[in-house]
Length: 162
Image 1 (tube, rainbow, N blue to C red):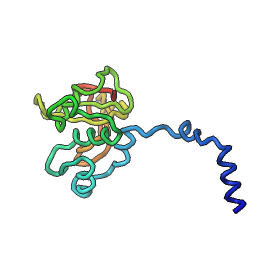
Image 2 (tube, rainbow, N blue to C red):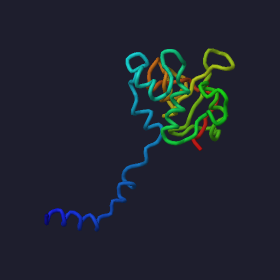
Image 3 (cartoon, rainbow, N blue to C red):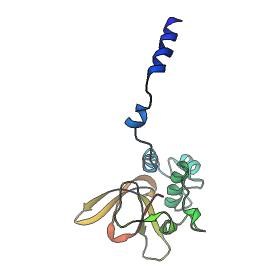
Image 4 (tube, helix red, strand yellow):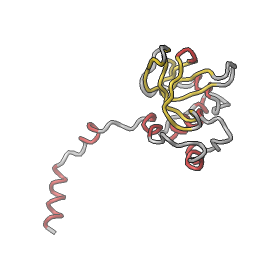
């Protein structure tokens, strides 16, 4: 009994706010990173539960980004588009910026058409075989959640989380 009283007495004198100074808040990109390695075939159930649709039947990069944002209570592209499952719906979302920062949302072209695209979270810049590129963390990158590089020449837009 005396040990319990001592613990409560010490706890009353303690400053537990140091946790917020030591541990940064979890960001959407951290949540996305916690799912790296989930593949649409071997982790179909887990991905379907998170994004709300079958990843084997749909292009799911935008659904993944929207679900990560929703997990953090951040409104997604459904607030600016009638087609939130399209990657390009993010071109109307958030704040446009010229240079990406860690965690920004980047939108790329796909298949040289005006409606398809790809979307994910910017991680860093890189040069791959002499080509300026962005390292992106996203879903439906080779059918899984992973890091992948995309040439900056395919970039359509960079959006900052509001």
